[in-house]
Length: 472
Image 1 (cartoon, helix red, strand yellow):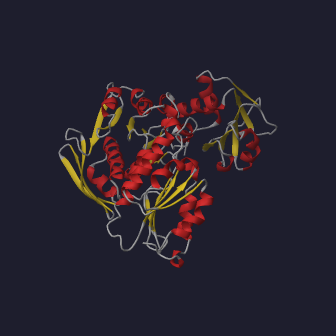
Image 2 (cartoon, one colour):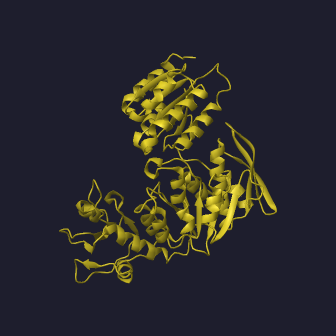
Image 3 (cartoon, helix red, strand yellow):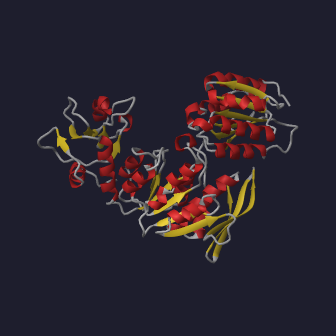
């Protein structure tokens, strides 16, 4: 439920000096239940924003949006249809203005999350911890200049917490999103090499990500990862506001985690805060997953949740498929589905996790399906060679490479004993993988979204490998 209606939209634009026109001299007031830029998502009583994208112009879909239930359209130019249209010069600016006006009406505590890796997983873990309350969060990875306003506009006025994921393609992006969302709590999961091709260096990435702290109001809270190499920068950029720290190694951190066990059967950890501590068993299998959990836990503490409530909720966490989920739906093999995205740091951690299975060479081989890592720019060859060296170091038995940039891996891997196959597309690679994977193999699937490796995961889960001859 939202408090949006047509008058709210018009008044929000008017109050911020955004020029607008209406295609009707008078209009019938209508409540707005949701806001969309994709006509396929439109539901009854929606506002449809006809955004003119690079490849698709939303104005071409206004009639479809109306048929699906839209009652008003935000447009850059009128179309020949009777639906109420509010014409503005820039739909993106108007959408941001409307989202900020609506955010000011929300009673929910707004939490902003960014980071080079783990921000979506951390968002989902935090939503699970807050599930006993009224919580809403970013749908998928709607984390850019359009996704964040849409996220806010679709939050219910009855929500107690709202989690907003923020991404950055360049310096200034997160500061822009912060002005729209005006969060109460900000978190950076970590700083890595994702999108380094755009930013030029990890230092530049860190400066862009820490806008989530520098743009935070002085009476709000920054949640700081003391284990990150840029923790000193985090604290500097958040020095004007309250800070809550977390760590798995720094004894002075406000929230601490001690890892008692982390293996293929799950994890056992203890969380310490002030004079309290709890121990819990978690369905998490890698230490970087535990750091995401610790980040989510620290934000939950900042939201007022007691440790005992966090303990109960934490043990029910279920990782979303495509984020290092261990899938055994195929009885012949084990698939580690980490296909959602890939940065160099995340790929190295995923390979480390796969290598933990190398305890008994008699019954299975380890295999990795690696999609190219996108948006590395001039660093692409360097990072792909680094990943190849890491695979070689762990003596992975079968390596399948997908994408043109993975050719940079070939020279290093050709000197190993691994079965090695490279293809430029997932469609070309799938039959090769299905031919060479054997019963009991353990297969990690990891790559950038552009490689569509979810197709590989589906093929692996559906194939009958019992007809293949094992290769040890």
